[in-house]
Length: 253
Image 1: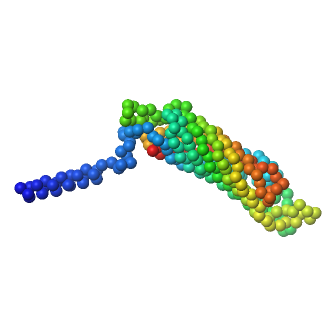
Image 2: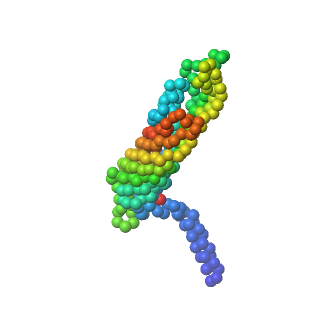
Image 3: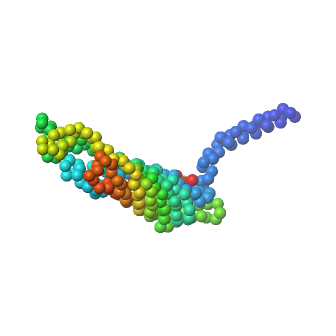
């Protein structure tokens, strides 16, 4: 009798191990075939794209007039991370952190050195916005079916506005022409960094890849102006405003 029970216990243990091994991961237990078992509380996403500053202030005009730079030289790849929390069926509160940095080589347009060589310099512009936004979906991004299922909408357009702070750094180094009687050439480095209040508006589209994963595309306009350091004391506030186009993926939780 004891032998028979031992064999039955061993068989039961093997069956239990096999069942556990074949069970889906815990992370997938909140997801059904084309739906979630509850409405998502929020989402975490990453976006990448292109950011183009307006470069409309006088410091940029000075660069463009004297050096072989154009406003497009300050455009850069933008990276952004978004953490969103659902506060209503069609509204999210979104916290975002972004980064865009450009680097351009240039030379004076109308001057060369004593060896007829170009007078060269490098210019970098970095922008780091930290913002909070409210996002409105034009249609609900999903719908609840009964009490235990949430079905995502395939396409969900949205708009939004927000505000926050932006850190920037403008750095230029290389050779320059002095504003003296002989126009002597000298080497130097000029830098300015500070924080600015920023506001933005955006519009985008979510495309559901699965109940949990979302592909998103977004267009955004950001407004920001900041003071400049003593290295650029003869210039007005720097214009950090501009457009960006990004695309990315997000996961609902």
